[in-house]
Length: 272
Image (cartoon, rainbow, N blue to C red; front, side):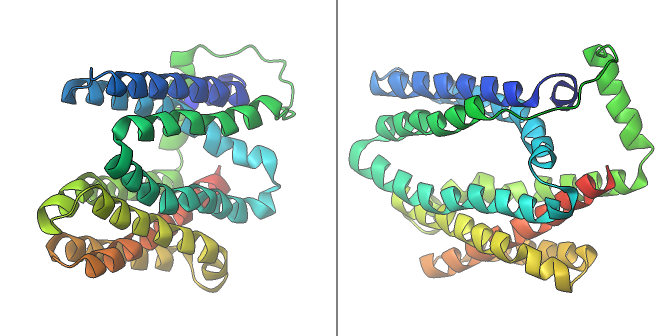
């Protein structure tokens, strides 16, 4: 996906990815409404949507530098995280209420419709890319070039390793949130929406304060503190049987997640 973002029009890659994910989400909604959904089918649909997101994300991340000057890159990355987490803080609670009141099919249908706004925005956006007189590389050669570039940059290697470790270990909280809601808090869709929404609220708050924190503290300190805080919040969310404690823990985890990854993201973009 990173090579595709370098070789082809990033706007077009994002547009095609969004349309594909919208269609898959619509099929998911229809299949659920007709009663054709099974655990395996749900996994397949989730895999396809995640694949579309994975193809889109490198183009999305690299397009930020097409929209703002370099000296505003850190603020743009934080603003991007803010916009994402505004939705993530509100949508799970709404989704939980919709599932509890009307069933999963309606929630899936609304998700499919939600792609339209970004599809329209991408269709209307007309970025100006510098014209290249060089022929395009073949895809496998472009992937190899990217790997060579990373291998020759100790800074990027360090950031990738730290981000991979943070994401791999931190994914436990994301993956187990439904079980936390059901088995530890003894709740249902509304409880899951509350703790997931709290995560998004914390992430949104962190995105608003990232620029201020970066002006006062080093990226190294911010990453270290937020990593430790995320670990402590994960432990607390995994053992507490009280909803209010879990909400506080997931709020802290969301704030730590965005602060750590935004700092690492800016470090990569500033070094490339």
